[in-house]
Length: 458
Image 1 (spheres, rainbow, N blue to C red):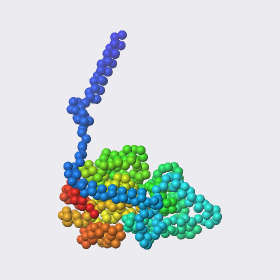
Image 2: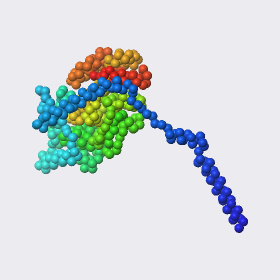
Image 3: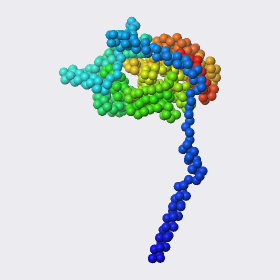
Image 4: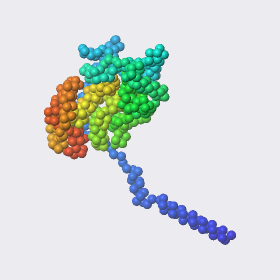
């Protein structure tokens, strides 16, 4: 019995020693405990509205009231019209512009499916009658692109072309068109979305190059008469948004002031966004991601309540559609911040007037009356930008600038014309980042507040 008692004592002392060792490992020191406590109680940064916000934003608020008044006038025009006409029908179309301008409309999934099946039935009927088949598709050629001054956007004319399977030159493209129709139909039946890259890889041997399937996708949208997003084929997301706006995205609540420093990626599924709310005074549309990140990190949108958006250069469809949607619902002005070069102005014009490639869908992709805040050619001297920050324009830059001077959407704005003439004459350009020569935060602490306070936009 003695050995048993001793062994029990040994086990007991061994267990106690083990507990002491465990305790010594797991129990933090007083210094560690206090550090952990202080870490858990770390206060979040608070960002207050700037003290001079009322003075800085006064001109911006006046601009917003003008927009609201203009929207109310349009609404009254529609309400007082007894013919049931659309607003665009109430606007006078100048002489020489075709009356049958093609503009696609938003469609529900079922309507798109039915229209695709109608095309399929027509094709099947032609084949059964031993006629081969042909498709009549609106022309997206440059000669069919029309700028309508009253609407300030590019639209598609009424010219159409026939794509016949019996024509040797058109047979392959006819086959590609039918294949795209078939794939879109399958996607809509499943109620899912795919990317343009997904579409291409479903039949690489037939499509050969993605540019071909992408082009046919736009043809199909015009053929069916719906927006490209209604086909449930989207481009990969590219744009970013941060600031004082929140919404629901497919049932999820999104607050763009709490999405980290980089903000929220603009989703390609704009149709899934609803319940948009904001207390922003304006939208700041930024060309470059670097400038966007400066404003995001400095929390510029809290000091002067706003929404900051970038498409990281040339705007994608999702960003253009998102901007159009929120400006329409929120009725707040859009101020553009782009490089002082011809391409910065071209980017603004795409947001405002649309692109020739997507002219058939310009109604849902354009945002009218965007104000050019900066960086403008006249700013280079006005803000004494150092010579080392000014770049010489290339021959191609100058050529592009001169071509823009001939564009109707530029000529309609004399102030834009004047700035572009300064650029072409001086042969100098500058990037937004050139303002960093005065200090890394100069753009958010000095340049933008001054611009907003003076109402210095055109």
